[in-house]
Length: 301
DNA sequence: AGACTATGTTAAG
DNA sequence: TTAACCTAGTCTT
Image (cartoon, rainbow, N blue to C red; front, side, top):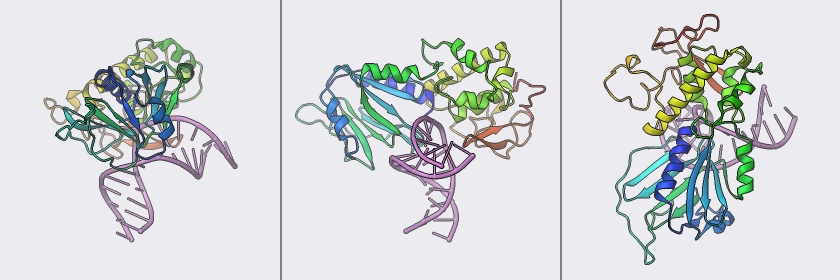
């Protein structure tokens, strides 16, 4: 789950439900005690995402920067119940009654597992577990982090031209380029593999062999897929005609994806067995039938 | 109890 | 190119 769409969902959630009042911050696990003390009592003013980074802004002018890594996840509790957002976890909202203390702050349940940060307001609580990065930074430091990130298709300030300048001059494979956050921010293993399948592109195609038109189409497709992910809450890349039941809303796997996690299974379009390889330590999935470099096809049109 | 997996990144070799 | 790190769930012994 933690590809770009998840971080934008998180940012929107904090923006909508945590703004306005003071926030109590703590670190039940203890590893973030000092950082929590710095934001404790402050007002959370804004939630913002850039690629896979989440920035929570406080009225002190400081920011909480969170990167979920592979395993990080937030849990939330509010009037709507409890739910998780981040790494794969048991899903399903649980209805629990909210109780408030004398100051009007929500009383959350006892921490479960290693909770790095716990945030509490008068309307709900949020627990963060397993992030690869969690730190309080200044505005200047935030801008420095963002300066190292490439354009994020989900942000209004994204400049695809910047990504194209790198891609069009690189001998590196498009599959590797899509994973480099300084080239394009927010793409992970699933969006990488699925977008290349939808484009009919051989993952090993050098960046500089892409035409401008194909790059523009790839960027546009990624933008649409990411927006769908923000809306749906999980990644859906299959077109209705390629699902067992075109009428039904696809559930997260097995019907949502073309190639990811489908090693050896028949391609939904051409029937070829899906191939899994390895690139820079990550599993790279593709369909040898639909994604041959010589005569690229457009699966499903 | 231990191995293994996961939608990620960084630092060391 | 490899290992390390963060966590929790699932599978194997």
